[in-house]
Length: 73
Image (cartoon, rainbow, N blue to C red; front, top):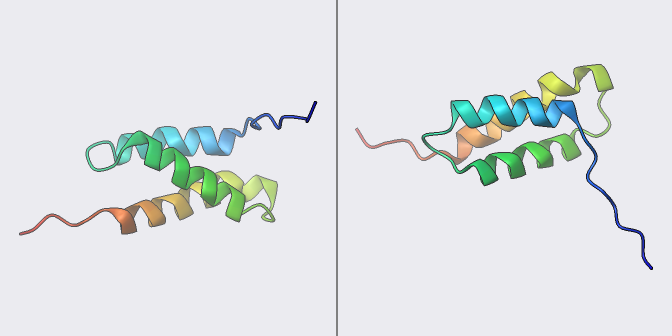
């Protein structure tokens, strides 16, 4: 039977998702926020562990902000 990889619990991801979900709740679906944060965590895999929470959240916020269409004025 092949081994199944279980998702790794990562507080930097969970905390970033919670904060960003609140920040972008009126503009983005929660599933998109989770997807972006997880990708950011993966992309930052070689970064120092102590810096990950801040780096993950900053990168995710930047990517999410770019995906929000500005409202017409």
